[in-house]
Image 1 (cartoon, rainbow, N blue to C red):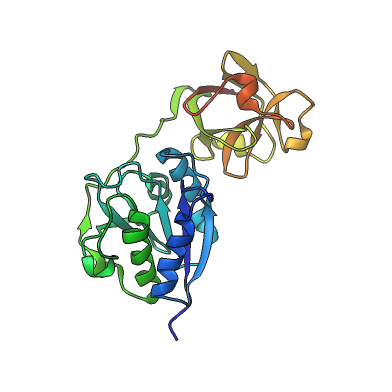
Image 2 (cartoon, helix red, strand yellow; image 1 turned 30 degrees about the horizontal axis):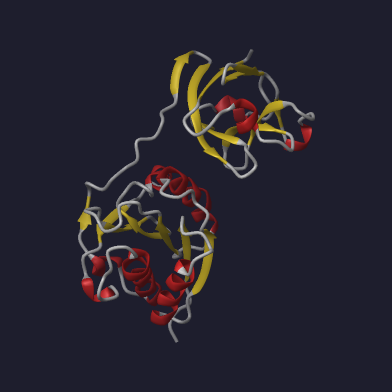
Length: 268
């Protein structure tokens, strides 16, 4: 019997159609011993940054040798390449459109291959469902033990998303942006421990946060500390500064979205 390995799926396919189940079936048909886990099929449609965020938050919580399939693919059928990426512990199979950008940012090793070996694909390869015909079969063969080098040559010109940068505009002042709005309307910024280590000190620092023409000065340990109707900041489980409202949507209250600028002054 072949070794049992895990294959995960992260897509924007939703669950109302058969797409996710079909991809599962393709993997299991190649390697029935595979354990399949759905990370999410609710990535915002065509939203590469949302897909990049979702897989970057989840992949490290799986055992080494897990194969992660990420299919957010608005360019399917076009000139974009199918790729395979290796880190020290994981393998990723995805379109070459930047959806692995945030994974690369976290990993010291990130080797990318262009998937060119047609023997491991379902034939004929359709123009509209590469999740079925390319990414899932590649994941199935990887799960069965085929080495990454068998799928194609290494490349260095793969696509990276242009991410909003954190600007240091003073000794204690930074400017970032909202990277993600979660289901609850919390605004997750790109201000993390690397960019603003003082935020993650043993005791919470004094802060002044400017977003959507409002200033927030309360930094809480938990959502439960927030007062009813109050907009406050919190250091979320993602490792980044969040703007939240207790049992309400901070995004709606502030009229903020992905890309909204966020300024922060520490010690005020």
